Every structure is written in structure tokens, then in C-alpha cells.
Image (cartoon, rainbow, N blue to C red; front, side, top):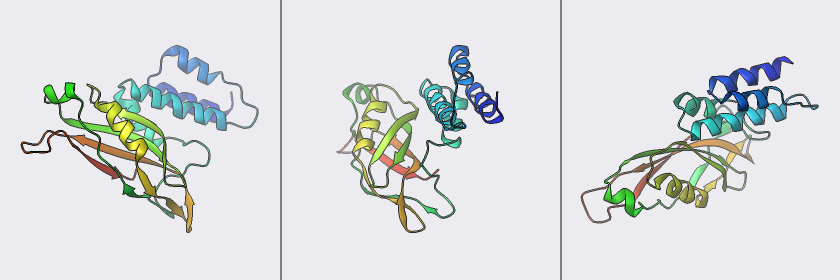
Length: 178
């Protein structure tokens, strides 16, 4: 097993994947030097994070990204939200007076659209789905690297709260570069 595959196996195991998932990842055959293994480890950690694994939630947003996707920082400037309608509460969540934050990981494309919207921290009662659906419709001024638009991984927090005044049931949202 080469060093790169070993590193991604360690990451997968630190995300507390099932033994079967980790074994499948660690025995993955790859002829082109490892990018498929990196992408598989990234997706595996995101999957573990979606299942509520606290360790995986942070690990998933800190590890190797899919090919061609950049991290914000240094010479990569963050995207700027230009259209970001808030999601609405579900009736079930409103009746339960549920409030809190849904943490999403997304890729903002070079065209300013979102893809790979993944729930990292859930809230429940349909609010996770509402947050993901809303963020899928958001539009951004793209991130740039040396003046050229590039795709980036970004974290988005969608805060659900029930205010005590008219308009209750709307959510706040925040774009936070990783």
C-alpha cells in the first residue's frame, strides 16, 4: 500500500467509518497515483459527517478536496453571495419551536452556482432539507485566484430561529469561508 493510500485510510478511520467502508476505501485500486483515493476519502468523511459523527464533521471540511476545487485563503479570494433567499421553517419544526443551526459544506463553482451541498451538522424536522434546498438556489460572485474565477469549498451556516414578531418562521443565513 503506498503512502498516499495509507494516509487516506488513516483519515477514513479517524472519521469512524464502518469497518466495511474503511476496508473498501483502503483496498481501492488506483492506477493514476491516488486522486481517486483522495476523493473517496473526502466523500467517505462527508458521509460519516452526515450520519452525525462529530469528529467527521470538522474533518470533512479540512481534508483533501475533489480535483480542481480550491480552499479559500492566501491568493484565493472568497465568493460573495449576491442572491441568497432564506429557507422557510417546516410546519413540524415551527410547531415544535425548534431553533438552531444547520452547518453545510458546499462547492461554489466558477460560475457562482452551488454544487455538492452536504449537511455537516443536522437540526432535524425537515430543516436540514430546507436549508440545503435554499442554498442550492443561492448565487455568488465567484471566488477568484489571481483574478480568475475558480471553484472553492465553502461552509455555510443557516440559523433557524422563531422570532417573537411578525415574519416568524424565516431563517438567518451566514456564509463563512472555511
